[in-house]
Amino acid sequence: MSDRAPQPVERQLPTEESRDLINLVRDIVQREVTPRAADGEAESRFPRETFSLLSESGLLGLPYDSAHGGGDQPYEVYLQVLEELAAARLTVGLGVSVHSLACHALAGYGTKEQQAEHLPAMLGGGLLGGYCLSEPAAGSDAASLRTRAVRDGDDWIITGTKAWITHGGIADFYTVMARTGEEGPRGITAFLVPGDAEGLSAAAPEKKMGMKGSPTAQLHFDGVRVPDSRRIGEEGQGFSIALSALDGGRLGISACAIGVAQAALDEATAYAQDRRQFGRPVSDFQGLRFMLADMATQVEAGRSLYLAAARLRDAGRPYSRQAAMAKLFCTDAAMKVTTDAVQVLGGYGYTADFPVERYMREAKVLQIVEGTNQIQRVVIARHLVGPESRA
Image (cartoon, rainbow, N blue to C red; front, side, top):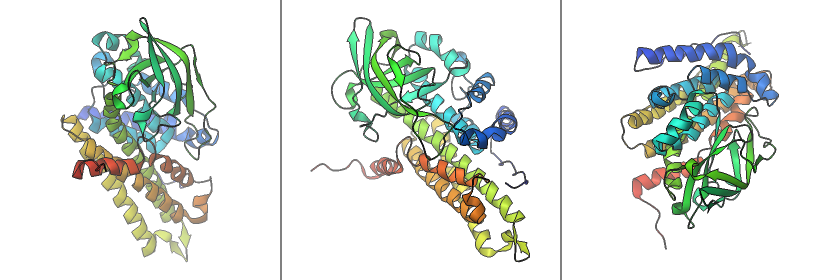
């Protein structure tokens, strides 16, 4: 790894408060996240202490209302915080994004009583959340989910299996989508389920290509009893709640992707300046200079795209199409930039002595989560030319 310290990204931030916030994040990253990232990932160690620190620092509820413990920050700022965290360690950046996703249903659709009871602990009380939509047979086709909730007096009994759950088995609460009615999207309802609920268990974490410090596991609901007071929104509203959360979640993934890409670009640039071949730095060679230039352009374009979508969201304007575009472009860019970073480092890039091989492995999952990039193309095309024709 190069001894050259990367130059901080020059950010366009709307207020002095947001600039102070970014400086706080960078201080935490430098002291607590970056020094532990490589070993933590190599040892598949989840940094719960880091999330506790982020919660104490007010960084787990940034885009939510301060009346419930949030940070009152616009998405434009929140996403740049995610980028800074993901550049240091994707397990942390993506973990914060998933936690925010898990809080969305209650913050946006819960009753005032539900919000007052649960949100302060979720946003700033040290709790960590998970989001349960996908199932073994319902990934991209989430509307076909089979986990079922059956009414039993004032309670609901949830039975089924959720899959690919970030923080599965370690989260303090889960936002769970379960079928309460007819087949299809109109029969799904959202619930807030405690992580220690009786009948809820987690399978062994998946053995993943990258992001090994973040546990991803199936969750089994074996007659989990949840009071109706933990139902979020109306019966049958769960799928629309899930979709509204995913638009914001896709921007979170976009920001994380650019964070990983920026980290790879920084490492490749520093290495190219330090490494000498044929009597001069390899950064003098035009082929490599052009490669770095293309990588930097991809990073900057991705950042501009996700920020443009965030500003639409902050202005209360539709942004689903732009969120899909940002997720598609930013994650594809991260895959390309990290792969090129390995190439810049040559044989060293293929070893665990340098972080770029980890960045490349981590970038791959970002093209899959929160809707595969093929699904993003479907979403974008529907906005352009309408839904597909049915024979």
